Image (cartoon, rainbow, N blue to C red; front, side):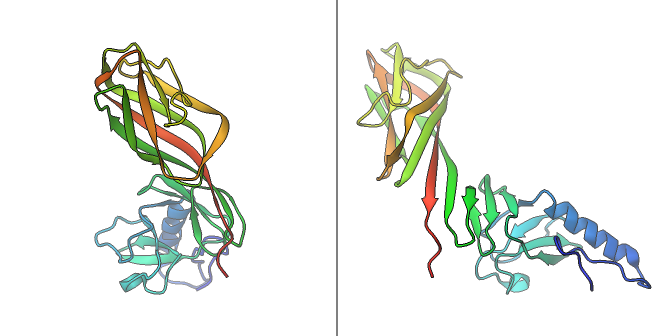
Length: 237
């Protein structure tokens, strides 16, 4: 069957019977890929009972009905699967991870600002966590900053009011405790907008450190998000 070049939509033939079947299939594919949202890029075996129009990015070693379709987009249509081969420059939003993905002509890259056909890429990412304060003058998060990341800044929102014998607090890292802000509020919904004065690269996995100013933390929680850039080298040859 003849297909369109971009989305591989099936085309009607002159004397074709049941034209509605072909037209409906083409509309379903167009509906799925024109503003591409993929449910997952990690599920290798086709799920059952999937609504029409739901799309998946087939990972390596696709199984069952997805065998041999690695890297392609599987669209659920009328109880079966229709596969679309992406072209260089296609973008997709991955609802499983909340990230954007870019096809560079060979592979799908995640959170990519720019990429070459050889796999070199500049990636912008955000890591977010809800942190519960530990009692004391400082409270340290898990390792939020990954190694080899250049941090643009850190944002945050107080989820439950901070209590303790202090007036305000600072946010930073061990060797720069106020890098992302000082004099920060402790009431619910107080926020952090901590831009680095210059982007800083961290070569080891690094936690954030919250420091009480003039006293100690008791209770409270905050949602923190690290905004950073990472680089990917050309693909192995």
